[in-house]
Length: 329
Image (cartoon, rainbow, N blue to C red; front, side):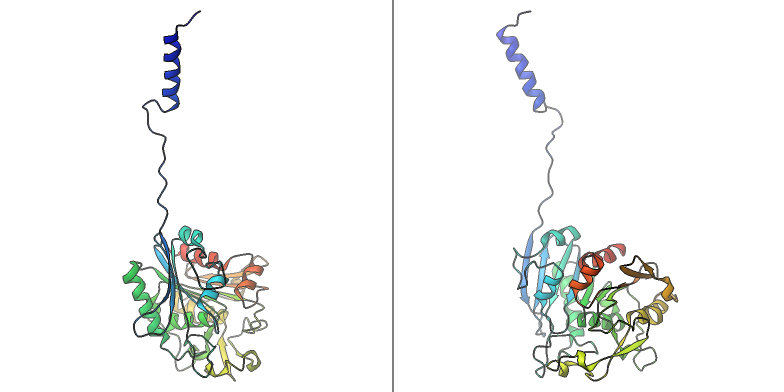
């Protein structure tokens, strides 16, 4: 059979139209807009000397305020958590925006202060160390600033070491400031002993998540996990920083397990956990109470640092923090 030139032209026109969609429903997809990101460095709130770094993404619908440990710097803590990819002040290029955008987090890193007698002991006023500043008022103001400036009302407080001890202070003394509290290697001061003159008795109880290394030699957790309290050896305190300690000779901690068993669980939901309730996978032992609002994990071979907790648990601390926050949503 023979075809004319016109027939061939019509044939190829039909093929072209079909391949291009031929007037049917468009196959073009629209990608969501890329979140706008910005590093806001060394901000200050009126009346306070603390400098603040804010890793700001337009994707954020919640915020986490991260408190560094004693003697630490705000950008160092961000680096330890893998939120700043270099161990130096953040830039737009150095921030882990992929993680922040995925988790919709505004990350806030304030800088602790130091007293003149211990100028390198940057810390928080948490009944274990003193900073010379009213850190409670500062963090309350910071929470208010985040709400008004960024329109975010779900704000969480997380800290490591002395930052975690400040988290404990807020859970006891100002629980309504933040939505939940996360402490890494930062138990409460004996200031809050149930039998003492200032027991931890918040008017409301907020979710709390504690993570501690079972071999933490800085806190001297090994051998003391199930004890109500223990005294930190003075030899563990750097003599240069000792003036910043409330009691450098007899610093006493309430163990995280003791707080879970004797303080938080009874106050939050009238539960009475026991050590045997812990579920261990050989790497981490976990206690969950109060319908998941109260969680404690012992990284069995973990030491004090973020790096050790991550290596020994096989988990990023930032991811564990997010798992806890997400289960509260």
